[in-house]
Image (tube, rainbow, N blue to C red; front, side, top):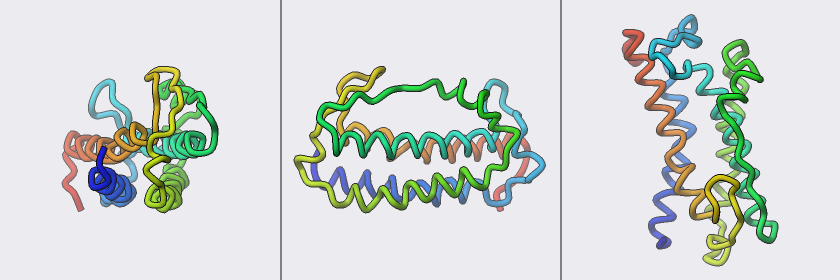
Length: 161
């Protein structure tokens, strides 16, 4: 991956917090737990997932940068959503956590050397795992979920604010 490709992905990653926040603007509070699309998470569940995922991903990156050949463990996101009762809890604290985790990670990403980007770990599901692979995944993660929130809004017949 070139330096300019990394910069583009870092910029995309940095935009993720705003993208998710914007996708929630005007979303009816009473509909945050609705499941208008069968088999898909509610908006509140998505936000909780992002809070948990972002804190996990931030730790993964830090392990890649500070440990020799770290093992990066996967987890069952659906089981976590059930066990932590995502739909039963306020979504604002996880949204703030998500935004904050990204805000403290962006400067880390912008400071990495070429050697840092190629450090290697092992992901229990994906195999070889580097900061570049991490960036490719998480640069788009928030945007994909923001689009999912917008699809939920459309399925509910609610127009964007």
